[in-house]
Length: 136
Length: 136
Length: 136
Image: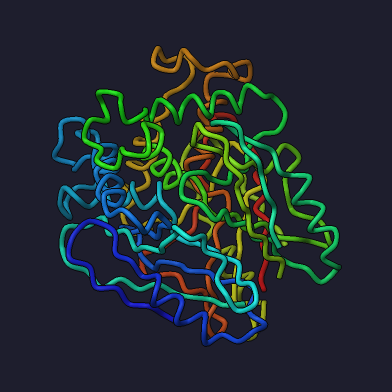
């Protein structure tokens, strides 16, 4: 199973509905959902789905923690030929989850009230991202 | 299955015993434990359970990496109306695990000798936190 | 199941082939692989396997983000008696994954083209690291 996500630059893209749809079709014996992003320059993330400022602030924090490679503080980076957003994207992909596992109870995903599931894009150019799903 | 954790401010709360009790009741065919915290302002963490200074140092590091939103370095944050510890809690919840998966072998959790399982609270006010468990 | 990794100082050690071998032997009904590192001073990581500069840059970033405890910026650390690389190793182990879960589809691990699986050693001395595997 697979979810495709079209991204248009850095930031969070909510995929909760797509994930819930897959879980609904899985039957009552399902116990565990695992999501896995098949790339090394974007991430998965569970975060608050209420105030959109949370998503803006998150993206801003990670941009400050890992500036583009043409920023003076990042002059030590060597993997720069794919653009100033490339190596920082790999670093953010190390800091943030590549996989998420969520229990399923009585056919329902154990998400909390305020939890949404996001793909976090770290690259500037548009990408089609693949998220693999496993339901056990 | 669920574990409730009462927190009284920021820091690590060990839940290893509660988790082991659930695994003991799971039977010999169990292969995988997954823990999932149903909130976006606290985390799960596996860390050294021997020297309590490790836990103090960990909390201190994350407090310096992500200061409260009334700190001058965090003036860019917009999601501040729930208090100066709120948005930093969401950021720490992005940096630290929301889910943990641990193999079970012959009925025993594959934890290393020095590994304890913790809930890492990021908010200042007391909270009751819910950790969902799945055993496959 | 278990994979042992001999490390010789900080950096990334690729274990993709060892993992794939275990998945090959698992049979067609396997749905999910979970890796779990049984230590609190090294990590697991999925990262780009093409340009070795990515691995060098990743290690450099984390070394700057979490300097040794004899660096002036880290004077607040208390857990220092096992050497200047010890508490920073615990911090890096909190920032980076202790467990990874990867879907298996038709007997094949859902790794992307550019994704390799690494053990990320944070200590300076040689260590033998144990990675527990579960296939469900």
